[in-house]
Image (cartoon, rainbow, N blue to C red; front, side):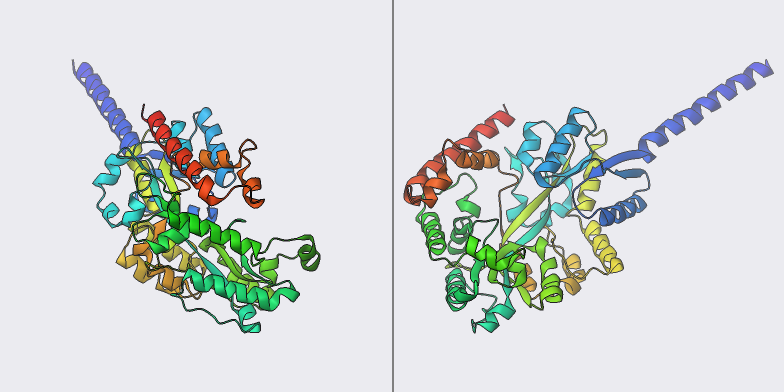
Length: 445
């Protein structure tokens, strides 16, 4: 009898140990995968700090998801097909992830998180579809104007104040081009080959107008502000103020990058390229600042570029995955850790900025904001920023593919003067708004 009781006690004890171990597996040995295209050294350091804060979670940094931008998204689609999506990942186009069923609805976690109340309102409104959130706005990048201060000084072109407007910008760029034309100097290096005044100028003239005239429900390309801005950029191209890299130019520049070598006064670009400021000084002896984007009749509203991070629809641990996504992106604790790690590494400046207004974070970031002249003035205007829609607007990417298609051939017709903004604005507005409605219907059918 005693042997039987002892045997039963051993069995019960063993079961208890097994049960505790299984519970421990669930609550203290969660494993998550993370992937983005950013600074992998900093990612590893942030992940290590996250695991210190949450010792029951192990995070693996996935390095098999390769590429940047669209190529990164292609890698994600391949991982999804193989059922090995990371639990948390950056994504170049939220609608692509949504239409392919890659994304988890994180509305309940976002709404329960008190810190999300500090996310800048214009940013918090993005990546929400029919009231449901599928992405975390991770960082905002400044879209501004790099100015070759040395070149302007050489040609006696005045250095603008930080609160300048776009009329002054155009006038200074034209003045520089006229003064340096014989030296192959140009006024403006455009934004990815396009001046895109129509995307930003209306946002500076009207307080309630968003990027590309988005008003929260539709785009309004037929507005006079959009049409006027488009015509102004065409005029500026025709005047030769914008660099076009003609054969004659290229013979002069050789294998040099014209902007970097000092042939262009103003470059419309993002804060991710602030490395140029040090590089151009060290390599070419040129002083460069990064001015806020020029304002308009309504004031100065910084155009910002948003990145997004998402939680995978394949995750087994959605709550913990949200914690990781927050730590790596907009969360206060993650940002404080990021700044500590940057100081440890000796980093000199921020090239991306919080999407939430944390006083503690901004106070901690003071040392990084003044490294490049002009950045502080943009940061101080963040509460008025107007973010882009490129990565989260459904149908937007496909719309531009439609514009660029051989069938429509809009770019050739525009460049040859065969069609004017007064005509194609209506065609574009109708097509883009139709695609948005149809995309939303498809996602939530």
